[in-house]
Length: 513
Image (tube, rainbow, N blue to C red):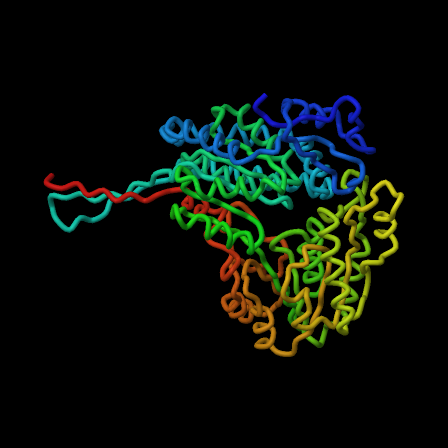
């Protein structure tokens, strides 16, 4: 089968996990086909890192990446000349298939990414929303007729698909980050090659299989799986091949800068959704119930492993003590464990390195005067989950942690923690809050809570970020433009602007009429 997934067999066969997947979810895994060959890599459940692979996928190399581009190029002419309505029909069917398989896709996502099942279900629905939205937008890609400077001329602007596009997607949202890029590309008439994160290829392969079921020709979407060792080579092929006209990447700012330089020789268009360092500002007049709910929602989503997750919490000095206690109380209801276990709201961090970074940030805060209000690296419950000899030995289980007394210059101030650390500092004036909030080289998302609408307008406009949540901690939606400023990236995803990224504007002048 050309769908490159293989389940462990023979001496290496084992139950997928101690907590069994549903029969239909296991059937979905098997439905993806089997492959053989010397270049395979295992997919590991982050909650059970010592248990061995739950599946194996092809470890693609430069030649495989080039072959994927060959397939995408071969399908480009046929796909781009389909009517917008025909492409939309395929996308609508894809949406229906994703939603009818929501539970199975969510279970696959949980065992490869670690996130809690309830959260995985939400991501599948969120990701499907982009497919439906761009099925609708496909028929709204309209050109323009301009007022000509002479009576015998007609001036037109045509919008045409940019061509083959390449997407490189992260592990923290393995479903939605693919649909957010691929759905507008397909709607515009482009074909695509996708390299999912090494840790989470199963969601990508499942989406590819469902797109074929929806009626897309083989080769319109091509998933290229590989190990971390081959990831750089595969990405380089995407950047170097002149047939790829756009590269869309979600991930770290450091890798984004590498891709930017690699795409320069072929002058590719780039969509970069890079790192964030989101401030969450709580003004003295804020409704503290609203602020607490918004902060917790922003912080614990995917255990804090989101580019728009709150990273620095700025609280007015008059309420900082009370607010800190409210957050501690709210976080007490979070249950950390395996994402498929009943009642679990937060799974592990993606791997041991993720936990080490979280722990380093906690240690740095405490060593420099921070005060631990709850959690910490040595929290008894999560330490037991990680302990030697336990079923989940070595997993990155981290407790929701609150530290106040945080100051600029601490590690968590300048770096994304990508973990469940609530790092609180205080401020006195609006001007100080704004200066602290904008004290970053990146500018993806920011949040603040106030009941003063004059302040809300002023502060939202002055924040140096691409997105702002006012009295709200979850702001992502397919109908709004997602993206950042400064070193947080280039371009926008979602909204009607998302499909414009995949279109070229051609000016046509017809004279002597």
